Length: 512
Ligand code: C2O
Ligand code: CU
Ligand code: CU
Image 1 (tube, rainbow, N blue to C red):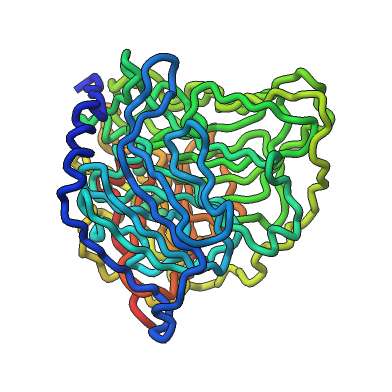
Image 2: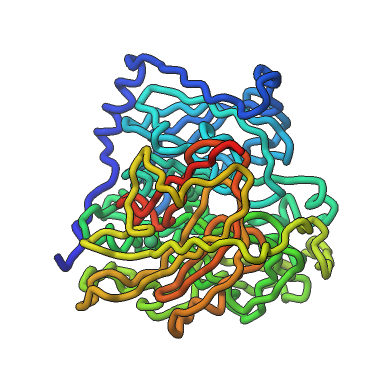
């Protein structure tokens, strides 16, 4: 097993078949409870959306358009600007929501296989979280009802059916979900034309511009890597900018690729937020490690940059082994650690937005403190018999072990211990795993162990996170206060091939 067996992900003719039978499927209407108090059920939502997952075609490379699956959206109720289409992109519409809004989404599945949508980073009721047990078939729909409880931040949505999340996200099913609130608005951050959304995804194409994917065991073990970096679904993304401040909001929406991001002129990145919204104070880093599922909110000051200059957002080279060698001999055409150019900012002569970075970001949640003495649960990340595991187990749709049962609203320390090596001959056991917990955002209490790794300098452990990268040999300890919503939620590796293989478990929130 020493090569990737690539296949075309979506065939043109198959899509016709899928679309053709959509009219004949009975429409099943599934209603998720609102998660509010019983008396509140029936309260009109502030925002009502329809989101359809369906086949489509987009121009990505010169020549033939690429068959994709994409989300298209419609606002049935809600403020103007709730949905923003990214022109020419396969990505779903950007959802702009406000903290406190009651949201109803009707998901319609027209992709010809089971799917369900998860709101990554949001604290929502269990039946609105997109657990794979809730997957709906082609022609069916699912109603989500939830209230935006999260702080302002950069969240996202993507499918979560068991075993098929990797191919479905790769086919194009993903979108940003931006939450705003008064605290954030008070900062007057660069917005409108001065806000740059940047979803990083790597893809591989065949000679006809169609998406290639691989499902052989070796690729699943390593995670699928494409050989072209797309930003918002476009290759070679360039943006004309003024000489002013910009807010650059980043999402690593890739299946398995790690990025070591830096500005090409060596200026530090000003990082103001992560997965769960704004940090306590801005930090400056020469480089930023962004793992699959993670977000970063950054600022760049182009005020003093001369017109005509190009500033690039690059992913710097790092040793492939720092991302974990896993299985040798798979030879992806562009391994993890290969340098990549993400985005080019072409600076013009016009003055742009003025801004001054405050020393403190006032919307930081002051209520958090490390609760000393709480019992620590260790969750080994391991590889056995060609299978990635969480705490020695793989996913079961309905199972939650004793240590995976928590009381609603209770605070726990979990540590993820990445057990490197052990298999010999480079066969597995050694990978960096971005571990994601559904529902509430968590805090990093500490990071220990591991070996010299070039990705470490760019890891940001400040602020609220829902996904943390655990490098080979490292142990990362997090403190999480679980949601008050009872039911089964997921924690898993956000390398989507690892997730699909079963490096995922339920945790069960028991009503207090
Ligand atoms: Cu972004 Cu459970 O996933
Ligand atoms: Cu999630
Ligand atoms: Cu993993």
